[in-house]
Image (cartoon, rainbow, N blue to C red):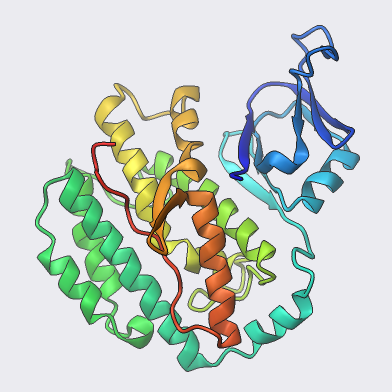
Length: 309
């Protein structure tokens, strides 16, 4: 069953009762116990986003959400994702899985990164070809040429071509602090990162210890590695917003709702269609299996067809 993504952007008091998330809004006259319309089963929640300075959440609820492997995302006063809370023990044989991850050889991690970048470039090319009408023979050549560890940095070559053709208007430059629609991309990637980090913990892996990313200040290096082939799915949502929205310079509630649909997007993984959140869990399970040595290939997503869905 796909888990729900909950977003709270107004003052609220969140508590728990009978393994339910209980929502009490100041503008509502208490809870409607007869209909339970202000309660949600905790087991149904995958990501919870709090985006208001006047949200109160009880410790008992936090405990139950974390025990259910729910990713809790907090936003700052600028309404951008700022913090992420995950369980410390997401798998029953976690120490064994940590050991396999820690003992992974450098050649193995380089091969895993090769697969990751190849899948990312292929998805970028697919998006350009089908939504932008751009010929992508060069990108497919770069994808096929990615070597172990991507020593030739085909990822950067593909990125330069990709961004220039995905948003071909004057002045666009991809960067966290650059002009819109970078604000939309940053928000979408933050949601994706939370989904990936949650799945990694559920697979008994340390999100901090990456196969390529290794910034000493980054607590989610492995999440940043694994999410790379999923980024074009976020880009697709942002591109659709840019094409239809009259103003995307600010993260309005309508735009946020569209970005919050990211965990429910359809992907093709292992030859089958599934929601992105489910697909990510299959990806992280395969990452562990590679560390363990039982398989040699990570299960990464592809875009579903037809494109006009």
